[in-house]
Image 1 (cartoon, rainbow, N blue to C red):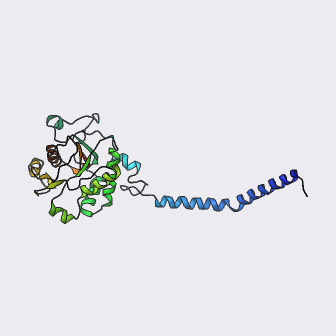
Image 2: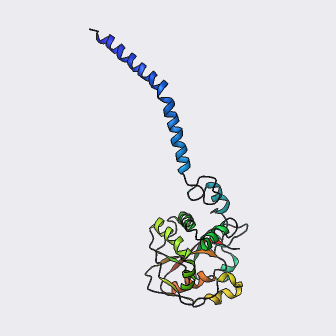
Image 3: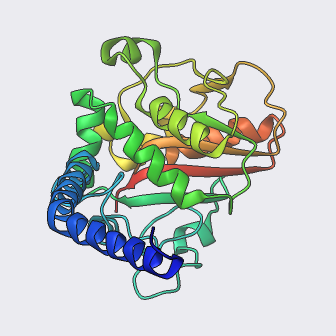
Length: 261
């Protein structure tokens, strides 16, 4: 029978031997397993929707800075690019003749690669890009801009049947889910179809959308957000803002994916 001191030495020796065995036989396998798990995580990580090279959900930091830079100087009302002025300024056009809407939040310019992404959504049925745009707009807004409801820009019934979906509605769905804001998908109606705005000269666009929209039901909201994919002259959003403000809405914000110059 061994004494307590000798038993303690034996136990310590056994523990040291077990640690040594673990280092020799198990650690290499653990390192290999960890490297394998890390590789799987990299493969499973979503890649940037723009460059498709760097990891990003939905966009990598480099593309976010290059194509969706929130620090870009823009008119706070219409979202037009401003050169050499503070981001909180208004453009001369909005100072001279203010539109019916109060603010516009834009992801980026209608230029490569954003223009091709918008076309892929609208004409190519790339509905996954609606999630990308919706996520980015929701992140851009955060909870800094109070919104009571989201209103997607409506399409004519014929055009929506041809396309199969309304891209503005698909983007608005994502924003509504991310920010927990009510989506009034049928509140706005297009009661008169006309030629696409992009097919008309700028001077004719306001007349093309005059009295083209109506509300299907009362909104009961003080602050509404209009969601659209592309903003050019702003005539469509201006007409829609007039419609909802006549119904009692006090403030209208535009949430737009791309802005033309």
